[in-house]
Length: 190
Image (cartoon, rainbow, N blue to C red; front, side, top):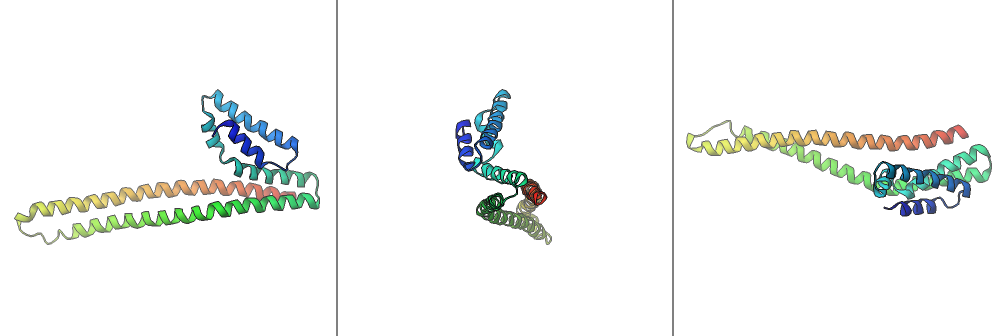
């Protein structure tokens, strides 16, 4: 996404705010792009780092609504805050619920696959216990190595699974902190 596309979508999402607030926000985000260019980053990299401009605009609208509510406590400003929060919650519900369901299904499938690898490896190794004739040594060795490989793959997959789950949890905590900041700002202003 180019600088112009990002700022255009952000500006469109901020429609309804005071013109001065919109200009201040746009100037702030233009400086992010200027700093990125000075650091040798492309506009696309900066836009990806800043996130979805539509979602960002909704969050900024909520923050602006809180500020208006703090400055002037009126029914109109309260309605603006409530509507902005409902809009943000709607986006969360529409985007996060399907994503969360997909992530849970993938995690469950991966966990079951890792468990299956480990169980399959153990079963292959247990099948070696009643070792037959020496003529069957190649088959026994092959099953033993396959069993050990399955167990090693299960352990490695389990380690990868733990890393991915931990990273996902960190991202969810960051996301939750953002909403917590918005809500505590709202609670303090009431």
